Length: 346
Image (tube, rainbow, N blue to C red):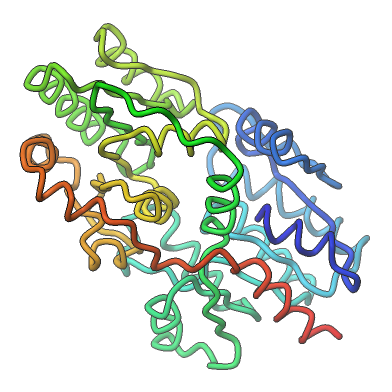
């Protein structure tokens, strides 16, 4: 949302009110500070161990009050989180048009990812402006009966931010070791799937002495404890707290291969020319897979080891996956969104 907020704040026609739910307080504060943004409303919803139901129960009355006070022309939110679902529902209840940024992503499997797939399907039914990142996402919306004039293919704003960040920072020096960057935090991977992922990393480190691993560990206790139990003692594994955005971009640039269950990383890493192995059974972002920049490997340890080993051993295989590709836009998504909103408002 950062580039959209900035574009609205610098426009001559709109007043932008920023609301944060603070589901992940530490990561949010990092982002706001580094991007120089201030929230007009901070709902401060973060409580340890709360369920999505509890988050929504606290969020909806707060959002309803803000909507009643501010009387906005539109409510915007990006992604497929509990916050996005709550924002869309509060806007619907308040009779305010909702704009969904990153609309139309689908796996058509409500369990993968959970609960995000359910949220985004429900959000689409009560959305006025569907800002789709790709033609494929737009097609998914049409197939669900969304009116053509409500769908706009704009790319993804994460590419706007990525390109601006890369252009304004120094490229990290090339390291002698080959770095595996790991991000794994999805709810459906808790438990045995995460154990298998960590076991695969340990096998790879044993087989390749020049390989190191960096894992920014998500604060969720079900991830944090297991990561430290299985990986914490290994001398070539760095377990670090969540990185801020700029640090994470540097980590992606430094990586030889990226292992992830993150949606955003599947979009950003291919733009940097980094091979992505997706630790999921299915993905709502098929474009990098179709272009050969990403591969679905799931959470089976043998599959992960085989896929990583192939890239470590075969230079041509690696080169084929390391070609930069940008199916998620050219860095102008935010301005397109603001232009479309202006045309609708003015």
